[in-house]
Image 1 (cartoon, rainbow, N blue to C red):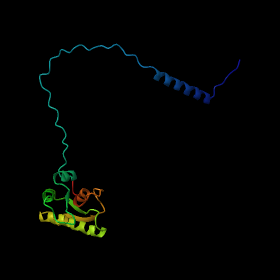
Image 2: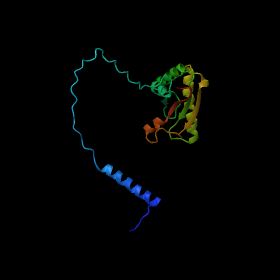
Image 3: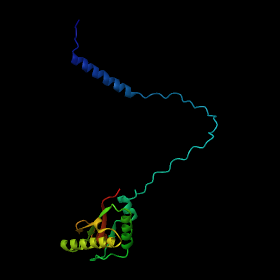
Image 4: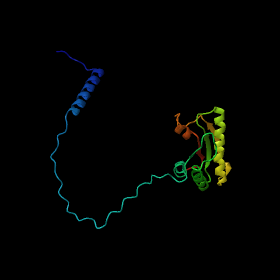
Length: 185
């Protein structure tokens, strides 16, 4: 008769095999569905009070005074004609709305980005972008916005919003963009 001794390693191996076998056995069978019982119909009287109406849905609108509010309600971009920095007639309502919004929120600071299309030299377009940004700033100042709240920068043709080379792309890239830099909610 042979006597076998179990070492700690052997016991650990045997325990691991037993755990693996038990895990596999537990996964191999599905529980049998039990008999279904239908609950008896309830014969309670309806409540005498009507339940309160559900709360109104959460508003998806922009927070007043926020950057999103500015973009949605005033607009953040105006466009220019080719080789021009004159404020167009279609830009005036946008700039009027920007001025009114900025007067409503006097703590807000803005930066006007002047942009150009890719035609022309880098230096020429930087100068044109600066004139466009200054035109937008002057318009806002003439509508009552303090000049100390407005900075300007020219990106020339360096930051196009449309990478295309069609006339439509060029038109989108000739713009003045008003960006809120501080004070918004």
